[in-house]
Picture (cartoon, rainbow, N blue to C red):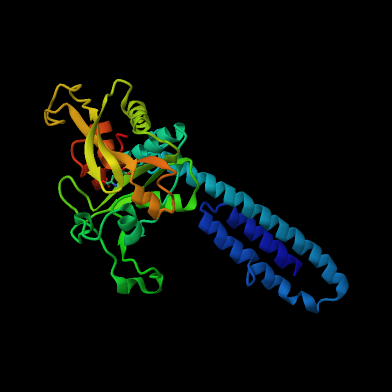
Length: 349
Ligand code: DAH
């Protein structure tokens, strides 16, 4: 048996030292040391030997096993080095090639614009608040002083939710819709806070509109300030400061009388056209001005719906479309660019 062990070691030395591939080394490991391998084969009969002989033979067997293990480790190292060298020499791996560039992601211009609008108002002391995109007709229209027959409530403009699909989720008896503006967050905020406060409310809004200049989903930032004796002059001052901080200190503002059901008086705010400096061009349709937001003094009925006494508090509100402002800011002339997600366009920001 001892001779067979020594012969085994001899065979291992001969075969393992010439193995040149990892798979071949593995096959040799199985052949010599595996459960049904040659070493086990030789040692199988050891149980029948007298203890004295068994001990002596065990020692030899251990030495042989250790030697084979060492040979295998060396062979594996040799085979791996050879494989790497072959790769370096061959066509597969050229370490002199420049690395493959990883294209970093970039913020979408609409996200950037929305964040910058919010940050600008935060610097003016405004909090940030959010409301649901799936909204009750009550908050989206009713509480904002939009009477039942107001044209804005038309099915033409509003996505109403199919009542049946709402199932248990439908608790209130007000119809459910996708909010058409961020103004309902004003009422939700007022119901949960005590004046004085000021807050901006960014988010997605939805309208049944889809053409060159309208998308069914777009973004708005709403603003609300409520306190005692808040004046229209403060509204003008705040929005003028926002416009100058956002579009540049040489940008001028113009307040144009307008109408919104939830504000009285109401005004639309235009900024001087950056493309022509106010002289008139294609971008501003020769007017020298670009409309950027709606605003006004909070209507007494909106305060009432929010549980406030309109004789006690006053406030102003405003709302702006983020896509429109992003287009003004980055001089993008086609709204669709903001929604196509063409990476050649997006990576410019
Ligand atoms: N909600 C209006 C819209 O979607 C924008 C707006 C106008 C909001 C005047 C206001 C406001 O808070 O005072 O067109």
